[in-house]
Amino acid sequence: MAGLTFELNGRPVAVDGYAPQTTLLDYLRDRGLTGAKEGCAEGECGACTVLLVAKHGDQSAYRAVNSCLMFLPMAAGQEIYTVESLVDKGELCEAQAALAAAGGSQCGYCTPGFVMSLFAEQYRPGREGACDPHQMGGNLCRCTGYRPIRDAALSLGPAPAGVFLDRLAWPAPTLTAVEQTGFSRPVSVEECVRQLAVHPGAKLVAGGTDLGVESNLLGRRWPHLISLEAIPELQRFDETADAVIIGAALPLTDVLDRWTSAPAALADCLLPFASPTIRNRATLGGNLGNASPIGDSAPLLLALDAAVYTSARRRIPLADFFTGYRQTALAAGEFLTAIEVPKPYPAFLRFYKVSKRRMDDISTLSAAFAWRWDGERVADARLAFGGVAARPLRVCEAEEALAGEPWTLETIARVQAVLAQTLQPLSDHRGSAAYRTAVAQSLLEKAFYG
Ligand SMILES: Cc1cc2nc3c(=O)[nH]c(=O)nc-3n(C[C@H](O)[C@H](O)[C@H](O)COP(=O)(O)OP(=O)(O)OC[C@H]3O[C@@H](n4cnc5c(N)ncnc54)[C@H](O)[C@@H]3O)c2cc1C
Ligand code: FES
Ligand code: FES
Image (cartoon, rainbow, N blue to C red):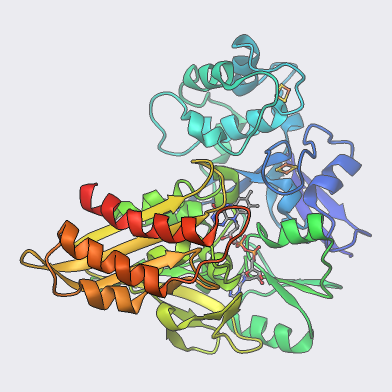
């Protein structure tokens, strides 16, 4: 790999001679910036957290991200800060000082990661009051215990004046095209389509939160990576009276920030989705594109009657998108450009994620239910599930059993019987088929009482 430049801790760096799937973390440590650690190499522990300068309107925001899941060429043109940059003339930054004062560090392996997440939270544009300890949800500590770490977050007020605050008044870097051996980053859909044709076997990468894990833990190697991060069309967020259009490569953090009219179920789906560091990179395009049967966004978007747009300028209802286990209706060389959610939103909408751990865990099962009311009766029901079949799906038989009926426990019992006949969950280490069917049925009662 040759000719890659980016800004690291306020200075330009030129990178040469690294394999395209080298992680940003390995590169940083290779340079002697060993504050970022490798704990898990799969986005779970946060020991590798660094800051990216991201767009925030015409200004910028610091985003804490997992450097173990960023392929090094994805850093091209970015502005990146590591924990080493935070000390100014020998003075700890406020996040560091607060963690030290609260006794928030013992062995210290996790501490640089916590500092980075807390720093990003302290400088979060528009934040008021104390820092939110949940913003450190992607950082694990094995020995200190979370109480003093939480106390440190709660002790921090507004970001102090200085160069780091001044920096946020300026726009974030605009990512430009990159074309290198093994990696490219086009700036238009058409160019991306062309590159897919030119590089057989190329793999698209958006946030890299799935692919980084495949690369680090499964040792997968691709002949060429094509990053979707610099294509403005895939970063869009547009809202009209009739629909919301979300760019397929817009990070989930931005989806949450920008979709201010979203129904409450969006937060129910996206706040327990991984952790802030993952959500700062992960995208809806990646979540739908990997077609995992337990991807969290699919059931909610199915219940919202969403459609997807593709690089072939096709509009595909999401209900027709998943065709089998990790298979989609996309043709070879075709990719997602946007997700469309029609308005008005359903009058009744619920999303449930069932997992062993409340936060930062993979779903055993997820479900979303949506409908309009026709007086006391349910009209146009959409019942969508993840984790009950080889693909995320709507259960049409159950929807038919619910449509036109009063929303009562008697109706629910009839719909539950239909679910028992139609769901075909797998048994695995997260739950047996019988357990998954029982949970899917019980979520209707939860919706009734909740
Ligand atoms: C620690 C951790 C926790 C996680 N927790 C959750 C969770 O709670 N819920 C959940 O659902 N997932 C979770 N994930 C999985 C992952 O974060 C999501 O699937 C995420 O949405 C993937 O988005 P991405 O942009 O990072 O995808 P990438 O890794 O960039 O790509 C994933 C796949 O999608 C393809 N792809 C990317 N963009 C497009 C596109 N526009 N069109 C077509 N194909 C495309 C890629 O080629 C690749 O095959 C977790 C992952 C980690 C590491
Ligand atoms: S090393 Fe654990 S999240 Fe990166
Ligand atoms: S202080 Fe040891 S892991 Fe957190």
